[in-house]
Length: 46
Image (tube, rainbow, N blue to C red; front, side):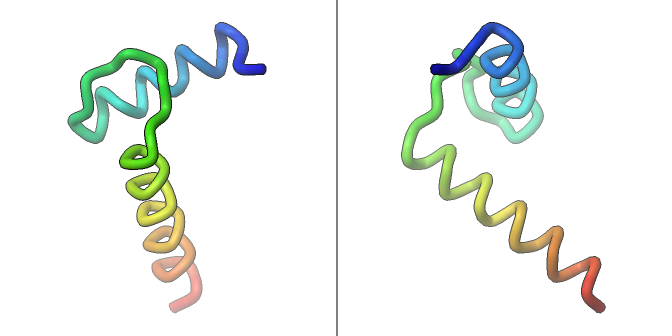
């Protein structure tokens, strides 16, 4: 269900946050992404 553009975006994000950029999401990646989204929402509310 994940196409080449999504996989490429995931690789860029992984590289940006210090994960090996393999293009595959793990539970650890999803936790980090949720953390970033929550921080982003908090900074925009304030």
